[in-house]
Amino acid sequence: MKIDKTEIGKEIVSWVKTIILALLLAAGINTFIIVNAEVPSGSMENTIMTNDRIVAFRLSYLFVEPDRGDVVVFHFPDDPTGKTLYVKRIIGLPGEKIEIKKGRVYINGNRQPLVENYLKEKAIGDFGPYEVPEGSYFMMGDNRNDSQDARFWQNTYVEKSEILGKVIFRYYKGFKLIE
Image (cartoon, rainbow, N blue to C red):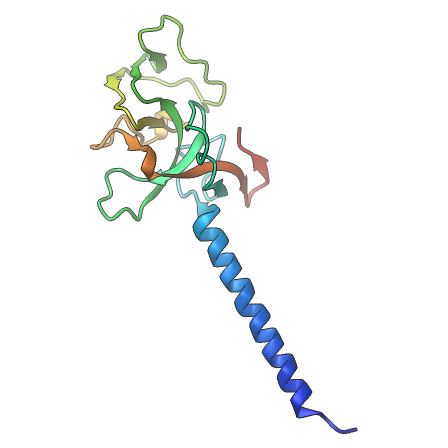
């Protein structure tokens, strides 16, 4: 049996092209369509657990504005390098006044607190008031008593341009759609 070196060479070139195309496609998806990240802390428990991996959709806010309750990935506003990514829930929208009394969130002086069924436990503490600037958002973790969120940052608000995407699901310790 004679081995045709030309056919073997064509097969190798075909495989190399396929692998390069797959790598380019994966890099493009990760750069322009999704954010794939690991969450190293418990600040979003029980929605997202420590060491869970999440996928956020970069195109979520192409035609709609971020909304209260969305869980988003963004550039941490206190990191001048822009390399640190955070995952938090949007609580305050542009132009709103946020105040936290006895752990409950009040918006624009409303007497009824924000309904937050996603909280890990009853939150404690008084914070604010915070006046959310236009084009910015106020972020908090779901594990309020153990979350380094906007209440403690030097640069309190996250500009819309710093939001990378809306978290659509978590995986690793179990698949869960994020609402």
